[in-house]
Amino acid sequence: MPVRYSPPSYLAALMNTLIQTDRDGSVLRLTLNRPEKRNALNAALCRELVEALESADADPAVHAVLLTAAGKSFCAGMDLAEIMDPPDPEEIDALHERLFTIGARSTTPIVAAVQGAALAGGTGLVANCHIAVAAPDATFGVTEIRIGLFPFLIFRSVSAAITERRAIELALTGRIFPAAEAREFGLIHEVAADPAVRAAEIARQIASASAIAIRKGLGCVHQSIDAARAARKEVFQSAEFQAGLRAFRDAHAPKPAAGAKEQS
Image 1 (spheres, rainbow, N blue to C red):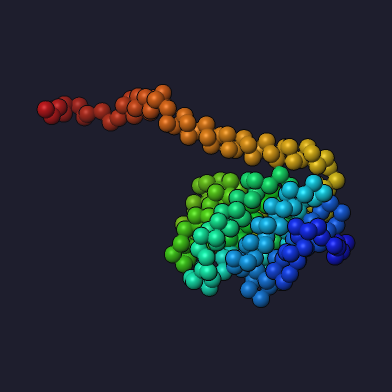
Image 2: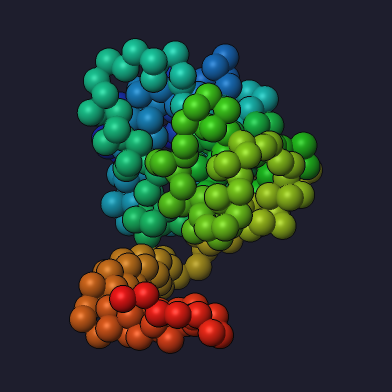
C-alpha cells in the first residue's frame, strides 16, 4: 500500500491541500485534492499538477505516475468562477497549454484512475494520461459548448485518443457519456469496480519494466508525432502538392452539360 514519504526537494513545496503526493517504490501517486470543488482546475491546482508531472518526468527514480482524485468526482474541468475573473490570464493560458500537452511530452507513463465525473478539462486530463481506468459509473464529456465555448485547449489530446471525427461530434453536442462508451471510443482502457486499485496494479507493472526502454520508446513516439506534423506541413506547402491538387481538382471538375453553350 502507498505510504507517506519524505519527498525530494522538487516535490516538497507541492505537498499541500491541492495535491497529495505519495510514493510506492518507483510509482509516484498524485492525488487531486479539491473535492469540495469537484477538483475543478483553478490556477493553483493547474500549476502544482503541471510542476509535479514535469518534475517527476525529470526524476529517474520515478518510473510511473498514478493520477487519482479525492472525493466523488475526478475533475469537473476548469474553475469557471476563476476563468470569469482570472488573476493572470497569460499565466493561466501558459499553464493550460503545458497541462493539456503533458501526455505528448512526458516520457514517464501516466496512469489515471477515474471516478465520478471527468468533464471538459477533466476529460482532457484523462486523454493526456497514457493509460486510464474508470469506474462503471464514471462519466465524461467535452462540455464547453454548453457555456458558449469550444474545447480549444483539450481538442488535440482528445482527438488523438478517440479520433478527430468523434472529438468533433462530442465538442459540437457537448453530451455526457458513460464509462462503457468512453472505453468503446478509446478514451479509457478498462472499466473496473475499484479503478484506483486496478490503476495502481498497472502502474506497478509498468514501473517494474525497463525504465530506459519505456522512456526511449515514448520519446520516439513523441518525436514521430512531431516529425509527422512537420513533414505534413512541409508537403502541404510544396509546389508538387499544389500542382497535384490542381490537377486532381481539374480532373474532377463538373463537366458542362451536353449541348450547353460556352460563355465568352
